[in-house]
Image (cartoon, rainbow, N blue to C red):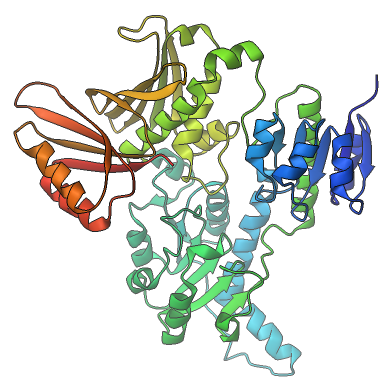
Length: 524
């Protein structure tokens, strides 16, 4: 029987190549026309230069796994690979240490003006007074985003004698205590406290350009900023202005909104820059090559692909029984986390009816994947979601119950924090497996899960439904579906809506002023 064939399209560490060669027929070839050869291989290993488009993947009739020796998979059409049953794996752990160390390097360079002093001396100028700098010991480092890299930076900063404060609503207080870091409740509190500020946030619509003129105004005078995460987190025009005015004493930047960067920040003497080097160490690159080789071996030999970024391969029988509940669980996990506003100590998943007869861990992973999307400094997938929960100190419980009062199958997700509980439940209906929400926030409901949902809790009095409908109509927002539930006559009621487009800020503010509680949820 012939061995599987693997194409190493871009250079990876030699130990990774040897690991593959011990088990498979391996071609190391970065020059031939890929479209003509990809059909010959069971696996392909790439870095960032190779673009695996849907067209190329469609040609890859034997391909079982794509290995990306690095973090991102933007150069792979993951949806096309998933449709073909091809596992896409990456190496997200490979750069954590390198990124944390580079951040600390920038921090020290910024505090002591090392690059500027180096350049001056190289040019023959001995300028001790100009580049004296400040000590880091006893200074406060503010960390925005307390995921794996942020936590590693905090460990190293503590070793320098710094006081560390951090903000991350998705990491539990216990995790902060374990690392000796003070948890602050808002970014504004970090801005008001930090002498040095380092960014480790995920890039989402909410965080994009969030470090803007308003944020700089809230910071301490003479603050120092380090960004080795994502350039788009910072409004570069606002940073430029803050640096020129002296509001920000200095900035150290490894990333920019557009790269290669050649803009005006390079002209300022109080800006330290590197060309996106945080992950560029020999160890990180070697680690990425070995990790991805291990992932390819697991995929081709039937092992656990721990870094898969798409749905892992499962047995046909389980997939037939659970398949429709995978996306439902992901949406319910996302909905529960949104309604709990992201702060949870425990996530509890209960599966009722026929689902209880199967290994429901896949559904739990799907729900965790939904819960932590956009809440981590790393891409969250169906395999690493449990690790993301553990890193944040979130306890995960799974229960199965054979009977369900009203439904053949039911998925329930509970987000628990500080003794308070948010519970949502759903099922699928019809031959098309439509995803149905049957309860939320203590009320029974009956509506289809949609990308844009709105929940109102209010006093059960006449006129509320009409007033809400009028406000949405006046704003030009179409209500696709509505359902209303109450606990008892004259008590509290819950109105749930699905809408066709996001509500504008003025409508959100108006509605929140009219009811006890208004939640605008995007499941997209």
